[in-house]
Amino acid sequence: MAEQIIPEHEIVTIPSDDQNLRQQCYAIRIDVFHHEQKFPLETEIDDMEDRSAHILLRLTPSHTPVGTIRAYKPPGADYYKLSRLAVLKPYRQYRFGRELVEALHDWVKLDAIKSGYKDYVTIVTHSQIPVKGFYAKFGYVAEGDEFDEDGDPHQKMVVRLPLST
Ligand SMILES: CC(C)(COP(=O)(O)OP(=O)(O)OC[C@H]1O[C@@H](n2cnc3c(N)ncnc32)[C@H](O)[C@@H]1OP(=O)(O)O)[C@@H](O)C(=O)NCCC(=O)NCCS
Image (tube, protein in one colour):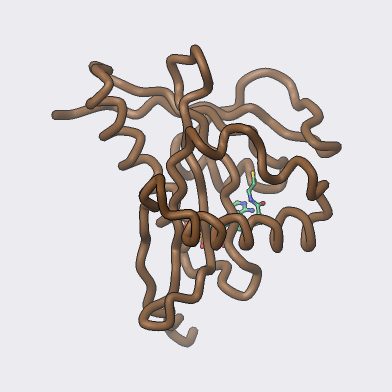
């Protein structure tokens, strides 16, 4: 089989005051979740954006944005939430989704340690049904029954990451 050539790329954790880069993440999400998957546009940008760490994967040297993911701690929760993972269709199967999840895990672990967490940190995601197997590769385990979110079935999946200092 021919060897896969992976486009040169980098991962950027976006500074909270960089609205330009954050808009690039929103544009990827709107392309994937609204135009491709037909989720409503109105709910794509929500009230968790300002408390989220937004991570962008872009090609180099062009800086073309191709993937994104975000993490936040819901108000009052002791866990973090992974959400809005999206890679533009022509760039799938290059392990970009994997790199974004791994970057998010690194960010969560650092933030948890800074916030005084000891031993482990929990991350929750609401997985679309066709990508449960993707999250399982990172240790996420299904909890409870499937439920409706934005008109589509989802599965709560949870992982516990050990914290080593
Ligand atoms: C889900 C998504 C982010 C995966 O991105 P990707 O860059 O194509 O995935 P990767 O190449 O990093 O795949 C990593 C691993 O997961 C596997 N994988 C990818 N998609 C999968 C799926 N739907 N189910 C099971 N495994 C999957 C890959 O084969 C690869 O396995 P390996 O590391 O053992 O070789 C991408 O398909 C996407 O954006 N989909 C549309 C948006 C979406 O559904 N987001 C999730 C919302 S819950």
